[in-house]
Length: 314
Image 1: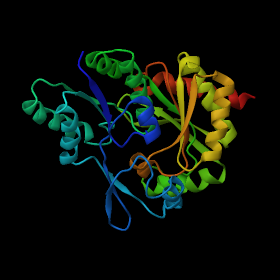
Image 2 (image 1 turned 90 degrees about the horizontal axis):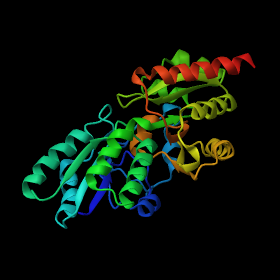
Image 3 (image 1 turned 120 degrees about the vertical axis):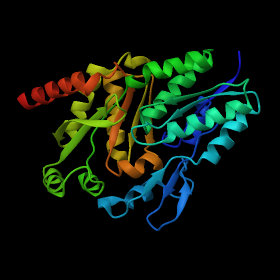
Image 4 (image 1 turned 30 degrees about the horizontal axis):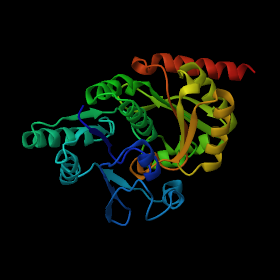
């Protein structure tokens, strides 16, 4: 059986401790363009400033960052490091609905397989991002560590990527104004009454709002009820709770998930720079493995609508 590595890009939120723990030796580093005009490679380990400093700089949309996928030269360098040692590669990229990372990796793979014809490179469009990609990578890594082949692991990722859910509130509506996702009018009155949009992933690889709840407590109640309807075997799972400068809320959600589902583990982490630049401050969400996402989110919207109706009736 040939050895292989799983290489994500910097849109995942796997810090060095998690990468080491689950056997992820490398990642492709996208580019961060700073508001002052400089650019740097994205860093999953927050070496140069803290998550709090990063998200505080975006508070109320004061500063905006831009991102780009990893340069071709860097992808070649990382891939060749393993191919030259006789190690095959599964490359798992940020959703193609948001980036050209998958297409770039596919081009590099085609080029390098001409140089290393005896090796294998399987490129996968995750149709996920941020902590959902972290969870997908960790589950695939555990499958690999159990003895699965590169083909079996890649097939599992393709079959399960639409089973990775997110649910949790976003409370910074003014950042959504700055990035053009809602109007200033909606943000002002939504903030006034404490509106929290709640989203899950659609099959095109984007997050899509399912419902809106007033107040963090109602949002967390809805999160747990939605998870109950969509999660599979929670007691066997590692569930992530990720946040962008909302640690207190995230800790509350961690405890409620433990109380309600008694999972194998709950991992708390910060949303990384690459996706955090677009998400902005204010998100606190759970990420977990569940039932396959339906076309058009028809089933998921129905579940959330029923939850909202039942909560209003009480």
